[in-house]
Image (tube, rainbow, N blue to C red):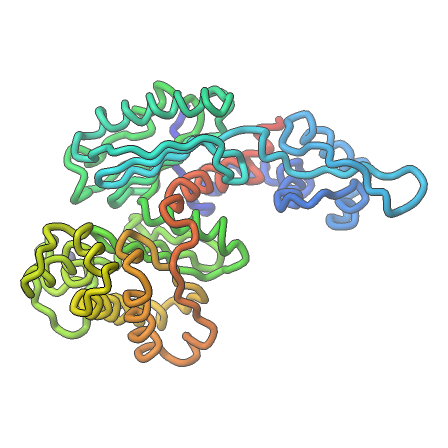
Length: 405
Ligand SMILES: [Zn+2]
């Protein structure tokens, strides 16, 4: 069985499912029910214009698959009340894995990204792919048991990793903070526990999907910016996550800040955004000014204590992020920019610095309805996004037709 690591709709269309996406298929009808609203056969007939017999046959197929379930009777019409049906998020489960540099969060969710069981624990990514993924597999089996599910109940597994991923293969590509993971076949290794599709993406892309699905489902153009040890972003444009040609889209961290800063970056260039505004960069700036902040955790504590110099430094870092984002705003015209990652927990001064620079340096038309906000899904963004990655693919028209066929 081929590993399913395809994320992009264009690619899944190219992978050969012509004829499996007919508008009157069960999969197409299911898309109308995915919003969770209970509907009758008559509702579905009116929405689609298809024959009532076609609708009835498709509803039966979807009921048999458990992807929809009876949702009671609609009593408003008088006479014999018609039955309603709605999406059944319990039909299958999803395993969602969010791997960070030093921590992992693993969750079992339903098909609507509701968390059924969850665990966060220290897990050093530098231990290498076999040790890390073996630990993930063991924790996942415990969580499935806790949720009363088995590997065979999974629609799929979604994994976010803290590095660039070639989205067509699901393999990390020269990830700077993941020694030993370059080109590693993550789906192939996880398959010893999980038989279904396994999808891998960059952690910030996963966070963007999670925040979008849970907090901003109606927003078509959004950016999620993670500011932590590194800086990156996930771009949702016209309702879809953008990977770019090789999967490198959104890598904000190595865009040069516009004011000619000469701080050396780990990538070999100087003045990169990550070198001047990431958690470690802010901590280093404060150390230069005599503060005892050995790491960015200590920096955040200093900020939260209200130290004025620390607040000024964080606000200036926010401005640097904002200067780079101003270019993104002019280019992409998002209506929401969500700021996440541990540095975003520094509070309003960081966000205020970002807003100040974006609003003063972007075109008025692009900022007219722009909101710059802190993440609502917080530390869960990654697992919610990993779950959304799986359902976005696994509940497509073509794949639902495979499930009911
Ligand atoms: Zn750089």
